[in-house]
Image (cartoon, rainbow, N blue to C red; front, side, top):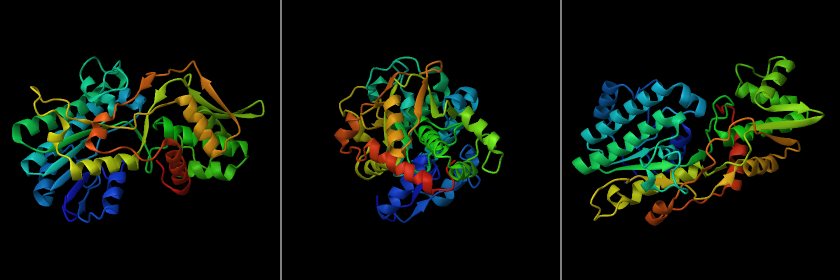
Length: 365
């Protein structure tokens, strides 16, 4: 890519997209194009067609998606499959129609079967049933992978699909109603520390910038106590408890979002779709690329690590009456390593970075 190449980043405000924009700007790319959802509804076929006709981007990074946690995925199943399919269909097809030089499609490692062998390689795709709760989202992302593969095979396009592991970093979602495990643990343990220190100014500031079920820092102290208790932060027998769902035994892999962005731009700059499969393969499939560390940590050890970084002196209580979920979910990043990229930031340093970011940013929802 030339530094003046016109690059369209779909989903530039999210955890993934914002990290990619930051990486591109740091590398000197100056002709970046993006639109907010209010400016361009990617589920609207006509609007997307008109955007491509007007802007004519040379490169496209498709990081826009409807995303959410386990409850949202299971509750709004129709919304997740419809909106993600619509976004992908419109952007990928118009990239073909308008001769985009290269497209990068971002998915998720939730595409892999529930009982996939660990660590999960690209070849485990479609080998057995998916996890039920996020099946609609996963099927949409699998369709995006197959759409990129099919356009490459039939039309000679250069569309690459990447599947990042669990991400965390700047612009993450810290809303306790919808956030994923790592940002949720950071916020809950931070609130636990503030409660232990009787630091009501910090608790009120936290709820002002990110209310919980409408409760913010100007509400009554009793209301604040009740809402943070509902989400597992409370005082019991003169001890401050942070409650965490499950046994703490499940293991998860985490990748810093800025490392993920660096991997994406590395692939855009240095690799083509033809580099992602064996040239003499009878069937071209599974050209997608896992982006991960190949390292995991138990939720119990993760919580303890965050506790140490934040300086919380209270207790972590693992509520075994709540579900654990899948016990192990680890990617095999050997394909990415063979293409020439490996992660740089280890988890401890990444958590320190994101905790500092959380404290210093007003909008963390």
